[in-house]
Image (cartoon, rainbow, N blue to C red; front, side):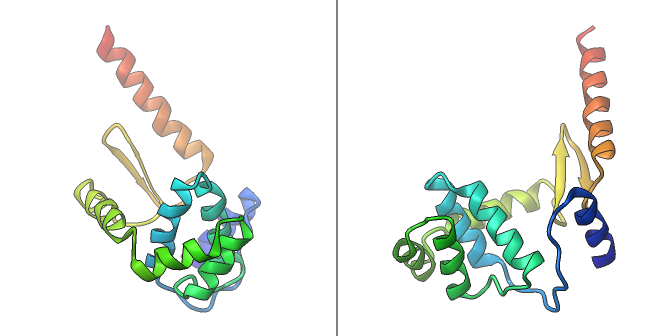
Length: 142
């Protein structure tokens, strides 16, 4: 699986290092909700991706997450409070519940009009999914 991810990352020009361990991302998900509210969701998710997949950092550690938050100009004190108080725990719980209900079993999962693709996919595969759904919708309108 890691070899496949490396190949996909290389093709897409994404950083991908030699990660030795898998770390719990729950606190990163919760802090991500905060970052989204602050208008920095995309920046935060990219920074966490790089920290985890390229740099092999433990994104389950509060100190790492505070550093990541600071790197994208989120207030470190507020980030610390979000983590300490688990302020977005319920929001992430709801995301997980919804994911379970719609059948998400792995990351990434691409959903489009009740069809699902699991795992890293090529542009062509995603394009086929979108095109097949557009054809179906046009046929239904006739």
